[in-house]
Every structure is written in structure tokens, then in C-alpha cells.
Image (cartoon, rainbow, N blue to C red):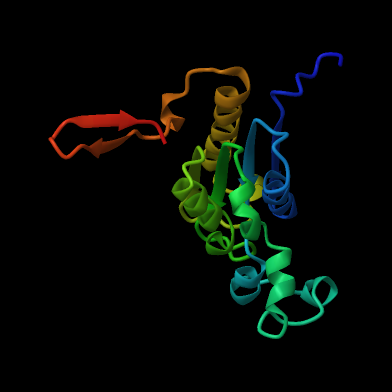
Length: 181
């Protein structure tokens, strides 16, 4: 309908929107590419490592050690086997609000293992405020990466910096066979 190509939709968000980006790509194949920024993949890991858990009593009835199933059921990482959407994760290495280990690092590792196209962009010294008050050159680079990722997956632009490295399998007789992940 109209000017929107429903085969070339992208999804992105940061913080709560990063969590929702992870959630939506684990529950639908509708998007051709996604970028999760300052995200949460595992509510349990977030609960143990984040600096700001003020909302936890409103979102969860109990702590993860008292009700691990509730935390698991609400965590995008629990549904990682459903993901086919190429993903970029944009993280600040010093983010304690949505620690990288509770979000993008987990998703990245799992998608890489599953051979789903994925990249992770980490900014040294940057906190949860990367997009608003991070170093100016990091804010520009962040936007360039987001646009580049969507250009690659939504318009078909050549972006070799985001190509997944080839894997080489050595056959018993010493012949090499190259395959794409």
C-alpha cells in the first residue's frame, strides 16, 4: 500500500525501545533488519547488574531468585531461536543502566552462534547517555552505523564493513570448502 515496502521494514530503539526491538524480532519475521541500542536481553541479568532497578517492584512480583520463570518468560533471549532478522547492537561499554552483558552482548553471541547476520558496535567510555550526551564523534559514528546497517539490509547497498566473515571447512583430503554462515 502506498509508498511503504513491507518487505523492507526496519526496527530500532534504545533503552526500553532496545528491549522492545529485541522482543519484536524474537516474536515476528516482519522486519528486514533491526538495530537495538542500550538494550535488555535478559531481565534476570539486568536485575543483578543494573544501577537503576527502581521500577522492578512494579514490573515483577518477586526477585529473580524467587520467581525465575517470570523473568525468563519476559526476556527476549529466551526466544532467540525464533530470530532471523539481521541485527546490529549499539552499546556503551560503561552503560550501567542497561549493562551490555545483560543485553546486546548476549543477543549478539547467540545470533552469531546461530549464524544470523549480526554486528555489535561498542563505544569505549560511553554510558547509557551515548545518544544524548556522549562524545560528539561517538554520536556521529553511532548514527553512521545505524544508517549504514539499514542501507545494507533495506536498500541492498554494498556495505562490506558489515559482511559476515566467511567460514572455511577443511575437508579430510585437504580441499577447502567455503560456505556462508
